[in-house]
Length: 133
Image 1 (cartoon, rainbow, N blue to C red):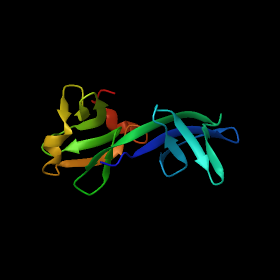
Image 2: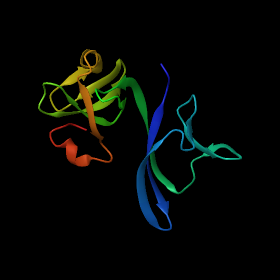
Image 3: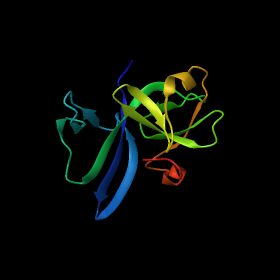
């Protein structure tokens, strides 16, 4: 499986805070020791600039939802047959879907493509009602 990630960023531009979800192709790389670094055209990898206030790498699960969308750590998903949302998290055994009461492995739901990504915890906080963070 390909190791992919995206990055939730909060940074300052001309005195104003901006937040966005960036793909790793947006000039980020992750070292073998887990350090997030930035790079650019004609610039070697270097530590994140002071403009970045928060950068959180979110890893690709290797799975796609029923619409073909990649599923990442931090995504909010609906599982077919369930009337509530779950957050995709990583634990020592792999990725799971978590709400206040349940910790479900994604494999059984993925087998039948019964997962749908409806947002993520950073851009859609309104989806987190009733879900433990």
